[in-house]
Image (tube, rainbow over all chains, first blue to last red; front, side):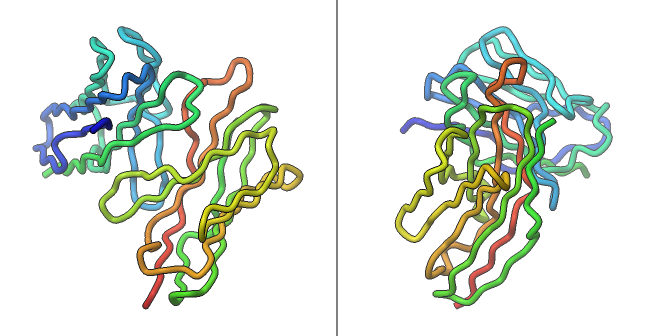
Amino acid sequence: DGGITQSPKYLFRKEGQNVTLSCEQNLNHDAMYWYRQDPGQGLRLIYYSQIVNDFQKGDIAEGYSVSREKKESFPLTVTSAQKNPTAFYLCASSINRQNTEAFFGQGTRLTVV
Amino acid sequence: AQKVTQAQTEISVVEKEDVTLDCVYETRDTTYYLFWYKQPPSGELVFLIRRNSFDEQNEISGRYSWNFQKSTSSFNFTITASQVVDSAVYFCALTPRGRGSTLGRLYFGRGTQLTVWP
């Protein structure tokens, strides 16, 4: 089945550690996005990529990094510089930058312990 | 600047009641898309509808209907005869399409938690 796969579903991290969240899509979409969701705050854009080997910062990029070496993959690294990383992270993709419809993964819940 | 406001944080209704979720948006772009997404407890966002800014026709899909009014910058969502399975968080979102805007990115409201009681 076509779709977006995020892994793992739950992730625990110790303070000071980097951790990478996986996002893979087999929809042949050009554009991919990472959003962060906090209770009562909706979704905020972290990074986005419109094409392979290119990505742009969103509204809350500090403390995060991404790569887009392959069309189907857009991993997000939460670094130790991110002050408050505990959140729900959602990956999305759309056919192209026109984004007539974005498809979302099931999310990764990251908890810092 | 792009902004989406969902003033209703939480709504509770009893099964079979009708319920309307409000969405007000702000954008300087003359062309844009508006969306509604549903987020069940599992967490995944489920696409419900996309509306082009040029198309103000209201839409009905089964028990769901949407009222787009450009004059008031609103895109409200009504569920008729609500059911327990409708319980979820609902997000309204905007994608600007004007020149110079970041094409493709979604601007979300804070969401409305809908609880339907049996």
